[in-house]
View 1 (tube, rainbow, N blue to C red):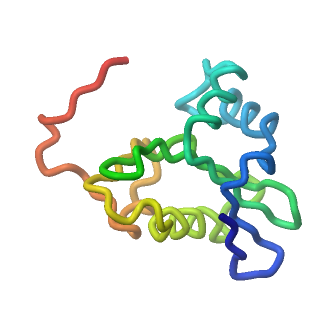
View 2: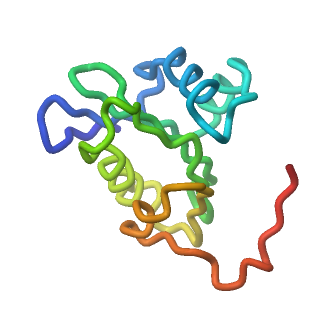
View 3: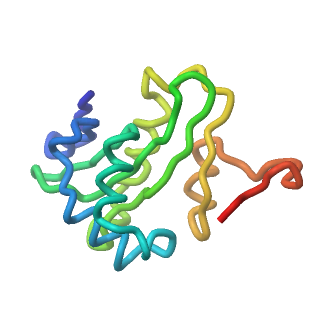
Length: 140
């Protein structure tokens, strides 16, 4: 699935062969706070087994997100990023809008994400803190 962005030079695509694996791996390893210990093999496997979405400007990848989902009841947004030099141009919003409107993600009971610093952005797309966070458990 490919969607042209607001400008004809912006493309959002689920075509995994377009993804720049090296760029994704380097970002996760060196710039993310959540995946610094992820190996290249783990990144490859995670992309293969997820709805993986790239955003491209002038055919160069500028951002990425993985949606881990059963396409029926649940989805988890992971590894969401826009490269630093492209931030502030609306690319993260374009990716979120693409995910929210994706035809295979329309009947989910829940879409989840974990963020340290993106609360303001995600709230604009209907994400909120759980009412009873005592229900949530994690094994790390």
